[in-house]
Image 1 (cartoon, one colour):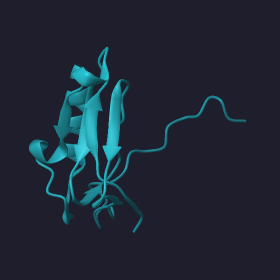
Image 2 (tube, rainbow, N blue to C red):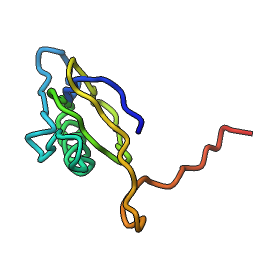
Image 3 (cartoon, helix red, strand yellow):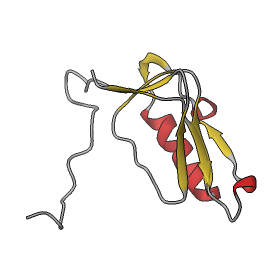
Length: 107
């Protein structure tokens, strides 16, 4: 499995950094136990941070996830002790990763 060591906060970027708000993915239902698929919670935290121009935060834990949809005006802050891990797709392929997107700039 692929993984990256990170501690993650999500912060929207308002006019000044002091006005930033943090969105902890665990507050949106992420377990961070390395077994639960946390994709929905991660994407909900991104949506909330995007709406408020905020910071998304991952506290200590291992977050198994499929495709994460990053958005503008959101900072993904990953700190010590957190890992975002590429989750294995379901055996019946009922859940998993988004299809690749077209890349109009490629030859």
